[in-house]
Image (cartoon, rainbow, N blue to C red; front, side):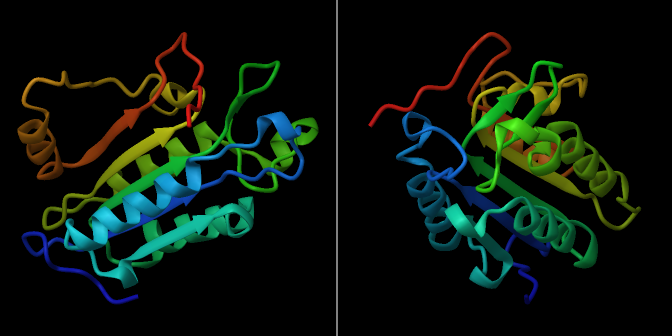
Length: 196
């Protein structure tokens, strides 16, 4: 991966995940638009966002296993010198009977959530470690977009939010600081529904 300096000299990368097919879930729980959404985000970042395609990882369906997602996250967050990261996930979000919430990778099996799901608290911890590694010369940020059920749980207890008035300017200001900005498709009491 070569680093991209097109945005005010800031090194940026993206990891984009879209999963429609879940071999361990019932046929009525398969999705239809998640991979298309991932393709659209990839195209937007590459064509309009000034991202170098070498700095974008796109994982779809069978290339989006738990191992693939976690290993790519570690690579981008901790082995490269990126300052801004975009993380996009479209697929299933699952809550178990103990109120633990998971992003569901391709190989997710609801009977063993903790073995092959990705705990949202794990993702949140990785992101927090990334942006806390900011230095006086680098301000690390993560912009997270989750299109799944229980997406709000990724930011539970994280604190600050911004309203949608002047969101473009507020997002730009945020990216010049450090921390995490998240846009989620579901609030605390909502369930995602796919309409095609």
